[in-house]
Image 1 (cartoon, rainbow, N blue to C red):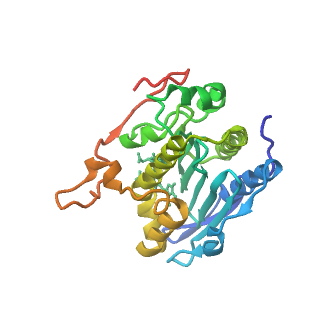
Image 2: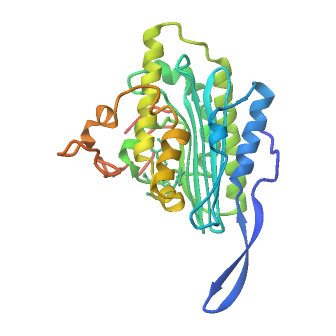
Image 3: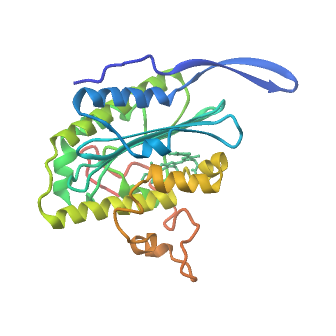
Length: 311
Ligand code: BLA
């Protein structure tokens, strides 16, 4: 079923800008990612029973160090979904959205991943069902989850073209369905982003409903380790860290990353970042501060239109 537009999401907001002692009033389209989260949750409740996550008691909202930035956190679980969580950050000049869904280890369904960063005029967007297992050597995983729904990607490919070079390491966490794009703000684009978000989300939700549980202990262990590797990468190297630290301070940012956003990194397995990504080990045995060893890569989309990896 096509997603329905539940609310007129991108809102009109007034902003005043001071420049050379004159005041200009701008009417710009500011997007409200809190509405994105509410719509996804509303869709979820139509299909499955959501329970509050224990994380919700500890994380609901935070005001940034500037006294003006609001961070809103939501966290749920279901019988199959280990964690469905959202963080929306807003101030006068910026909106950030990080919405993710992680399965219990008995299920191998992908990880839902929406990361939207909006500032004055630019938007950086990653929207994907991140594969739990490598698609290159698990072709049945691609067949099981992606081949049937490639039309969702094609529907938005023209509106949201490939965003250009990105951290090379990121590609292996992405699927052929990924929407990686940058664009200037407009109401039309934000409206299209809202429907893309709901459509990707509904595809994921359907997968979580259809997926059967693994009975083989070795498979459950493999799912658990794959999710832990993903969490370990993002808790250490996600591009949003710098901004999050500036907004709430280093201690709070670290707590948000390890306990809320990438919850499970300290529980699902005991392997360390260096165990998974030894190329980041420095001479004294610590993790390199570098965001990337490979560097920026993939000027163009590394999948063909059928979703085959072409590098
Ligand atoms: C930039 N965010 C980016 C970029 C990517 C992502 C690919 C482009 C820069 C790069 O190539 O690294 C997103 N990368 C991802 C995602 C995965 C990944 C989702 O590997 C998953 C595996 N973004 C957020 C949050 C903030 C944020 C919560 O999701 C802030 C709190 C900010 N992202 C942010 C900023 C940039 C960015 C400020 C631009 C700065 C930069 O490029 O370093």
